[in-house]
View 1 (cartoon, helix red, strand yellow):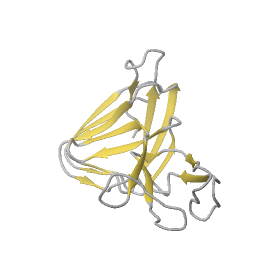
View 2: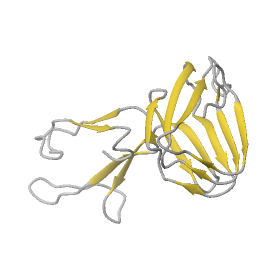
View 3: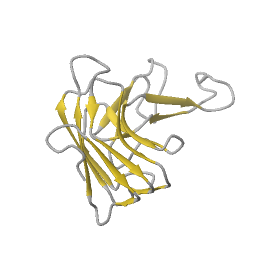
View 4: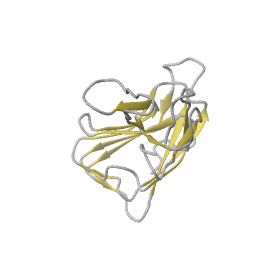
Length: 178
């Protein structure tokens, strides 16, 4: 399904939509020089949506520059929490599936650091207490995203040695967690 082939467009489908046998959902993003004025292909479904076998294929007509692009909405039930695969897409963007608002969007990805424990801090002492944190993304990436974490000279991250950086790579197959 390609809502706006060779240009951005909307496609309204009455009733449910099921992607069978790794069918493509092809979306074009049309960013513009003026943030807030971009657009993307949008599929509007008045019924259920099953994306569990869908391959999301995204291409840019013009460089994406908006914080988000709506690519699908539905009024019924969503089956599948991710697409079977994703390819293409603007660098730094990911797929956000919002079951509360029944939308699927391409959104700018943010890095989320979650500290362990009940206090909002990561505290360590030399030769003593250790702590941990997790790093995730705010959306499922459509292309690889690498995050470099560089500690100060006294902190050893994941056995890399004190002061040495580590690189976390998030891919379209590993999702929001490296």
